View 1 (tube, one colour):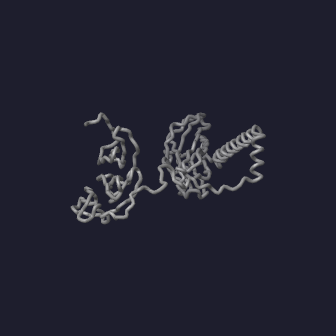
View 2: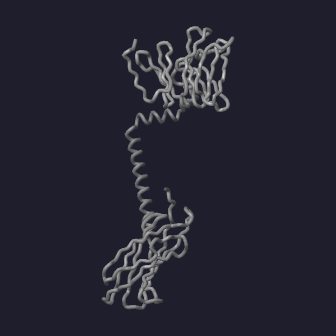
View 3: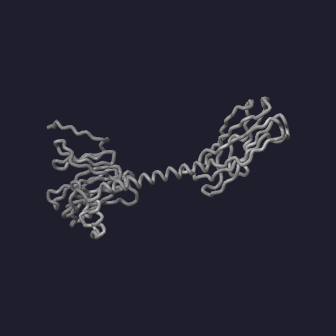
Length: 326
């Protein structure tokens, strides 16, 4: 008789065994599911390796007890009584199971014949005094260790007084906590502003111009905390009323601690009295967290006058670079 019961699996089945009113289905996702014949799912077990074969085992010595045999790809053959693991057999030599058969063989009433994919046949004889019952008192659920009481120290007098104070003065304690938290946030913000101000303070140490009537003012500041910096440069032409063309801006680190992507930049035509802003990326390539620093020079020269003195020189003392946290 075909029953009108449908069971949906979450993966392709690898084996099926019926034990009494229970149906065991092994799937390709390492799971062993147990269903009642009416379709209700009883439990599921996760295997450490893919399931290769499943077989039923019953023995007259065990009475009406029936055990499920599950062969895995890692060489283990597991015996389950319900959802309890009662025994494990490990095949030596890296054999991979192709099939399992259990029953009498010769004078032995309980024998397991295992065929491997290499063509070998391995016989295992069940011991006569084997116990396939589950351990006494073993139940599903949390481990028994959690019922062992912890060695918690006794409550001290100071602890009791503190709890009484918290019950009597909850509002005052909460206000004090909020006040201290606001102070901590304010102090953090002030320290952050101090660091940013220190990285921008005193960057221009010297501005020089040549003897020409066309003077060029260069102002610079450092943005960033390192190791990536950005130089914000402002250039203004003063006096003369004449347009300045063919000007170059050179970025020259004093040592090899800094790397510049664009060490030479051609400036546009400089109109007297107008500020021109430029940004120059700069990277610290020295030893991280070494605390050393150096200066960077900005030179404005005339490309048309070879060998002439720079129109303006700006020396920038770089701040200490922070460690890159990425």
